[in-house]
Image 1: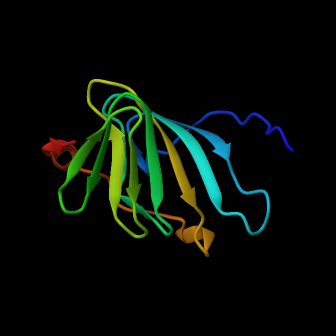
Image 2 (image 1 turned 60 degrees about the vertical axis):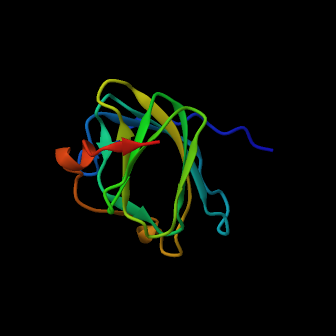
Length: 136
């Protein structure tokens, strides 16, 4: 057994995020054959990721607030606490908070065969993409 050391909260970089977003690492690989990473991510109102994809997909579990998640087809869904969303490998998407409320989620993913491809960051989400009609 191993009690993990506390890791300081970090603010995510503006190259990959719009607005204020903070990350707490919960789990990272210890052994060469392990791939799982889990983080608690907190978004200020209106904050969001840039477009991105993951080599092995990603699970998002909303723990508070309301999450918005969009895809390249123009779909934007709202997720409330207790809901989990899965994005498959290679699917471009973004996620963030509504304009009027903080949001936090657990982000769970596995590293790609090449760590540089685990998450592929792309352009920022436009205000029009962020404001698209939402479904639940």
